[in-house]
Image (tube, helix red, strand yellow):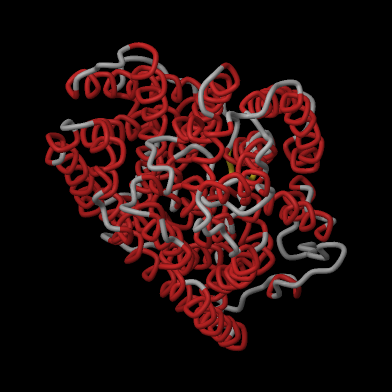
Length: 611
């Protein structure tokens, strides 16, 4: 076991701290549904932004990002567009404002503001709940596997086994570790709701920030004594039709990873990422912890600021750590224990590098932070799942007059059930990458068409939303049975076409949404898009009404914002790899784009976010 007493004490101190937070804010959380699920809309935007960023600093995602940075170098800055990471820019510029204007508690509750009541609205409401729960359970299983694989590096099972009264098959050892830390996260998330999650995230981010600087410094120091032996194109973010990244004679096994990932035709891959990414981003946030943080802000202006802060808070700090571990992995590759069975698993670079290179004391700090990252993601996702079940099912269909005490008790029950189900799903997961590709390619692919049309097309109705979601969701569940993980992204257009067909047939087979509902939604949210018929009707009644004319400004700001965010990712990688030209250019781009956004976005927020 690599952990020393000091490391274990640091981890124990963190666990005690977050549990105390849950118990301290328990009374406030139980006072009302709004306090439990949204913190009473009293939390400041910068704390919610830090919490949101902290929740994205998850252990499974960090392991994956270290792996792709190790393999693809500067070209890895594009691969996270799979999520896509630039959806935060769309949220920052306008979608967080639109969403927060609705004044609802969950995405399913939002449906009523767009589609009103009736059969179509009920169907659309229910399918959002189904999608949200599938998505939340997928994320919980994804994090569960990453944590277990991570912990077993530092606490070998043969040390634990004598104290366990039953035998555990080797393939389930990571899951046992996952269960332990899942129970800790479950405790503080269920006790304190949104407030305890945010405060725990503040603690976790502080730990991760310190740890990131330490890892970056260790890596930079190591580069002073060693050269970085990588393919020439590894150091460049630019690419041609093909990837042209050949590891032969350096680390031959990496070429197998590239072939399995399916990224060799990199231009085709990038075109697909951009096409899919723009549509996913325009659809707005998926019904998970990201959406809940937006709904928890005080007002639309703070919602925009919160989403804008996420990239600035997350990217530079996280990528100092990611680049640091990738560099250490490259320099000391022969020292790393990457074999799982008889196969090299590059997802093991992160935990193995920590084991080899992080000093005593700081190892405990870093492990506490990364375990906290898992618990942060888990807790935020669990909170979102609870919100959908309790607010959109229990309070709507089972007990409309529930007291705060009954709501609190139901949150506990639902939270425990969701945790049990997510653990069972996690037991069936093969690896991090397979779950990741299913979530970002299949599951999110099924979300796009319905959720783009709901914002931008007035004629789209609840029935169209339901059929667009349900047919593509069924396809997303079936596709992985017949399609390899590496090919899932390229089947996104098929999912999109299936969903669009469902949307159009469902919409035109039923009557339009009630006119009053559409007019109220349009006046409240003020979306741009294909809303002319509704705009005319609103202005007939309210001639002074001012429609949203900010489309061109929003698109310009998104373009600049994506450049800004990408430079924030590249900057720390250049710093850690000691590429002076690269970090100076990246820093200059950050300064220029920040200045532009100050003038075109920040200074205009009062106008953009006016209710």
